[in-house]
Image 1 (spheres, rainbow, N blue to C red):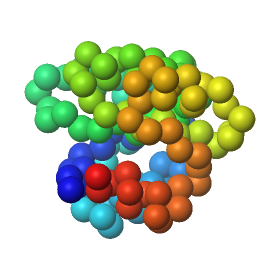
Image 2: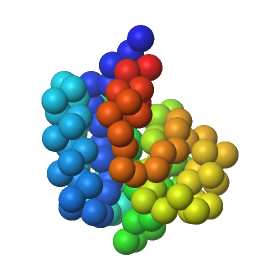
Image 3: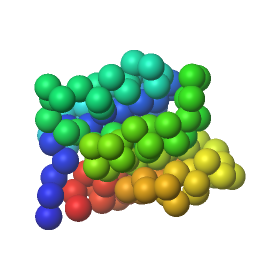
Length: 118
């Protein structure tokens, strides 16, 4: 079993950001939070930081979770795509393009635990 030590969270919803950050931090995960693609992608592309996992909202104000999945493939970084909209085709497309997992918000504790430890 592997515990995720570091996660980049890209989520434009401040309520979701605060909730996930708090819940992940209580599980010992270091979380760096970004609200949009243009702020989150440089952290992924930086070679000076250890490879974190990426958790991203499917719909971002300046792109989509697909952009994150594509960028993460270069560094072979696991991406979890989240959506508040269960009908979102984007989530399923992301999974088909290589996302580690696709989940619907809000995440319950069981789902969160399974994503943090694998």
